[in-house]
Length: 330
Image (cartoon, rainbow, N blue to C red; front, side):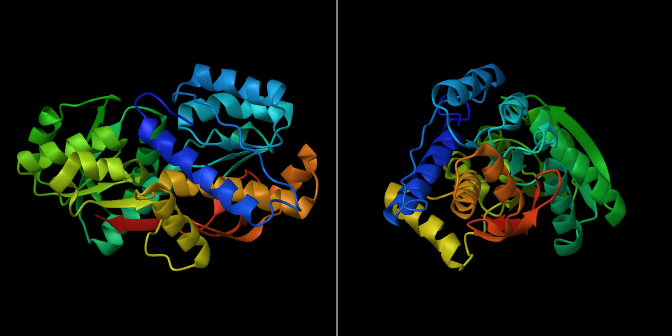
């Protein structure tokens, strides 16, 4: 997980959420009577650092499986390493399609970027009844994957994308982009970004009087976004991987357990990795073995898994799960 650097808030959520899952599991007797030991490293959301961490987990710690709790770039770098070593990895929230293409030991419980982007277009077109859209895309794996899906679904729904722009990771001055968006005044602006960029975009949009509905994605889904954006976060809609109103016991165990343990709000990043761990634990329980192939086969055979982020009907041949996509509003 990225415990330091620009993604540290997400990394903290990953770490705390998986620790919560481990504590809950061990308190209930562990897996087939054996406790779980969690080993955590900081990859700083950096591909080179993630590779070093991967080799340490495989060669030094000899882990039986890995929760891939980081962003798309580092997860793309390490997926082939875990595949070659035949160590099952379950990615929590990284969205790039190439991650699971590494091979049959790599799975994902989060959403593919293009699917998430398509879901955003679906909400814009069918629920919000939007007609015109501005597209603000972060210029990295994450943002581009979302934009691909949004464009494709927008074309099917007849949405008119009146303006598109790429912006760099770390951008803090959105004035030039917002000046153009204010002139065009689209019904909706679909913006990709992590919590820092998302918060600055929303704050500056409010200051400049943008009237368009701001529509975000899972990168907005953290208490840090609301903390930084303040009043400008009000009314922002996102597609994400966590429904805070979900009354299923598994969802409540995560949401209420997290609030109780850490005195802060849970988020999509944490919930996704909580589920990634629980998928591994469930597979170990069913397989009754720490043999890598047995674990891999048990993960692949998962059916109707009841997770914090929804009920997974299963994984396809690429290791992608099928489950509902959530939409939330601040």
